[in-house]
Length: 98
Ligand SMILES: [Zn+2]
Image (cartoon, rainbow, N blue to C red; front, top):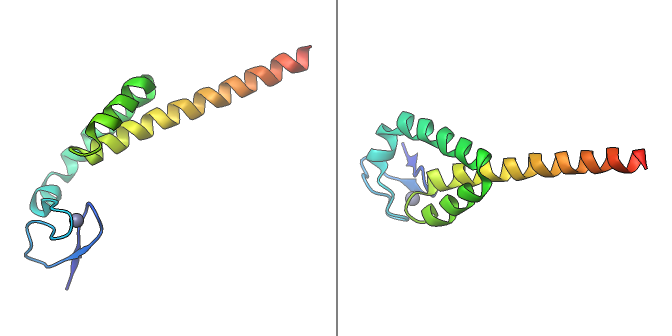
């Protein structure tokens, strides 16, 4: 019977509270899973609406809050991708008219 660290994926013992590899609090991350996913989508939305803010949050939280940082960064990335697709489509339409 072995379980894995939610942060680094390293295998840890069943009764380990802290990951020996990265120091992630295993008991905490298991218990607060639902709350994490809720705040995660909120940060992704912020990153999507304000990509610059999402990027800043991603950089600031990269060490302390990797989960939130990743979702804020993901939201910003999706926003940039959507924006560039729209710009590409707009320029195709523009070129086609000329
Ligand atoms: Zn770990």
